[in-house]
Length: 150
Image (cartoon, rainbow, N blue to C red; front, side, top):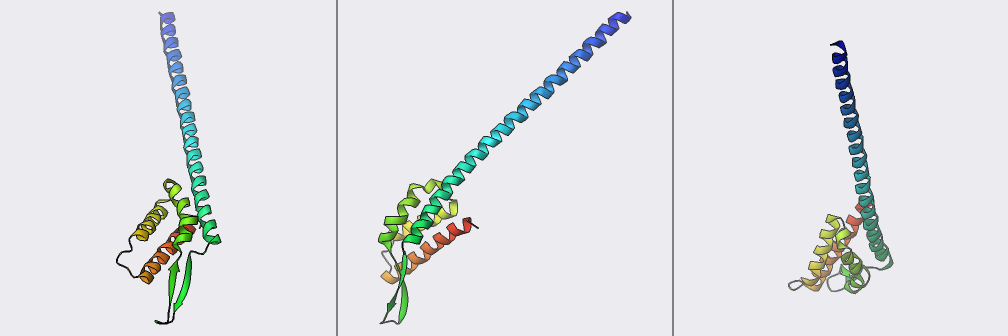
């Protein structure tokens, strides 16, 4: 009978050791898979951030090369008015923003869309009011981009 109990206990111990070994091995594999998944997600996020900054750099470069806002003095009213250069904006910046709209951060995307909507929504505005509003929107857009770099 002692031999039977010894065999039974030996079998139980071997089963327990095998069970624990399988449990630890499965856990290690799961942790390894999770680490690999996290690394892949980090790689994708870094790649997206790289593309985002590439676009923002292009916008800031174009902004530095072209003067989008100039100021003119009106002798009749003795005031200085902002003048937004729509042609230069369309030629040098708009295509960069809209070709990469999906890469832009939400606030920059919203300001870009608002600027674009305002370009075509100038029916009730006097020319200098439109220029002033466009200049303010464009300045806000550039400020929002610069905030990202801080």
